[in-house]
Length: 200
Ligand SMILES: C[S@@+](CC[C@H](N)C(=O)[O-])C[C@H]1O[C@@H](n2cnc3c(N)ncnc32)[C@H](O)[C@@H]1O
View 1 (cartoon, rainbow, N blue to C red):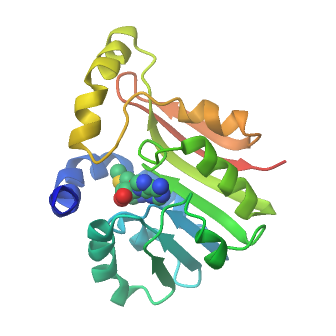
View 2: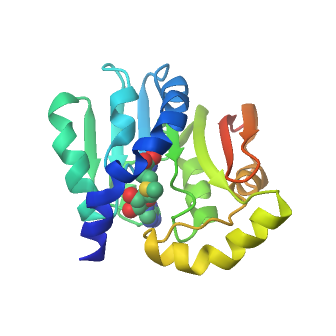
């Protein structure tokens, strides 16, 4: 029931946030060609930015979120969806090792229960020439705001379907061995990392 409520309010809640991050999604996603994995596609916000000739696999473990994404699919015949989480062993059946040109991770490593395992899977699925595309919010470096994020996290986590305000996702990506082709940080309070990463 809660997941249905979250899914119903996700797009309306995001309207004002998308004014800021929508252009960033577009800049990151619209040039991509070839095979793309959209991890935790949610309600399918990224779909509008993918090229028509890209071959997109979109995975999402929440049936409620996926139901909204599926409503958008008639416009995007190049996108296939699967009701799966990124660390589900069944992913082996749909994504082969070293098969993806791009793995897209937007606003999702904050929520995935084991983000480091997810990043290891990203590495496994990318071709040696593949790229990881990231747009994620991370823990603030502002001391006061960062402390508030720690205090609020348990409540926020419950309200926002498992989202965490205090993850150092940028560090996890680099620790896993990804190298930034281009990445930059923005926001002093709510801090974002946006980047394109390679395996070598
Ligand atoms: C804040 S939403 C972001 C949705 C979308 N990526 C976007 O950019 O709007 C986070 C999504 O991560 C999904 N999620 C949670 N656990 C996951 C997992 N293990 N694997 C993949 N996605 C997951 C949630 O169901 C939710 O749809």
